Length: 233
Image: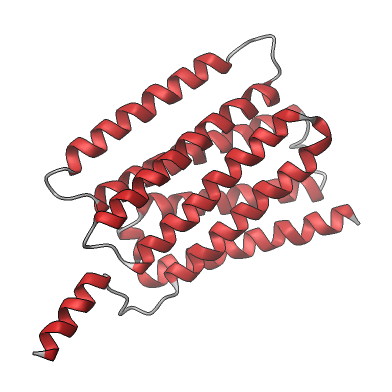
């Protein structure tokens, strides 16, 4: 019963991944959001491998599976950071772009390095150490999402598509931060924590799919209002 539920969930995640990738390719949005496209491709491939290893009884099990999972988690976290920074750069004013992006990037690097140093201990198991590290990195990502929303609210060039992307990122990072924190609290709630992380992941992919399947005439709201005002004259 449990395996059947996880099979359905895993298949749903893979399908959502494909839908998002299809939407990005169809609208050629990979030019504007290369890190998002790369994240979706890597996420799709890793989900396929994880599902095959779990349900197909592959040799990718035990310590190998754990190492693969956390390596993938670290790689996707780097892509999320890069995506956040590029979106903040796009949403910021021209004169402030370089300084804002450089400053935020430096803070993220410092916090990430300090997190790795704080959570590293040879006496602590890899899963426990990486769970704590992933919680901290996801929390920093959620803070970056707040900065992104602040920049988008102040920007005159924001579009509905970018707002949806930021909304999906917010759900993803907040869900991962909460889920990883729950994992470290008690072994008994690990299944609930895993389900929470997967649910936030699926909601993020669903929002991104909606963002990239909007019609091509989606333009920034300020441009639409300006055009309407000009036409009214």
